[in-house]
Image (cartoon, rainbow, N blue to C red; front, side):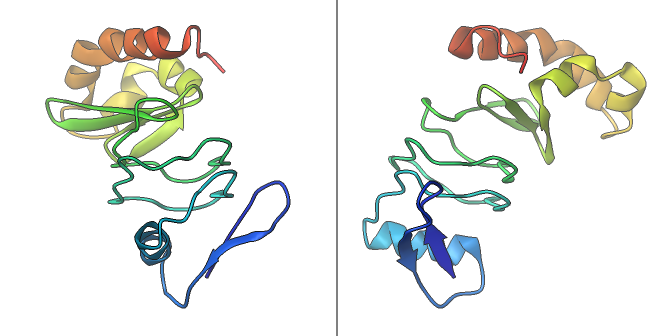
Length: 142
């Protein structure tokens, strides 16, 4: 697999492996900089990027569930049942990843279909989550 820069498509790191997780672990071990790396369509569930530098990287359309944030480009927290991750565009709650705007516009019926206790949880934590996003990014309704 190859990890490329998003702007020049220059190969940043290459390794024989079967998953993004293996590739990233190999790159981290070699202390490779992820500056401007292209992570579109990547699935990072279960990966831990504490201390990594992703400035300028392209994460559009990648899966961010269960990622621990560096508190600059990606923020994370846990509230009761669910792990939460967000940036200025995306909000991941548990295994659900949607835009912030989509989360704000979900109906009670849509939320209740996500999980057994999802609506009760969402009603309890929605304002806190959206306020956290606002404090980090201002009006992030993108």
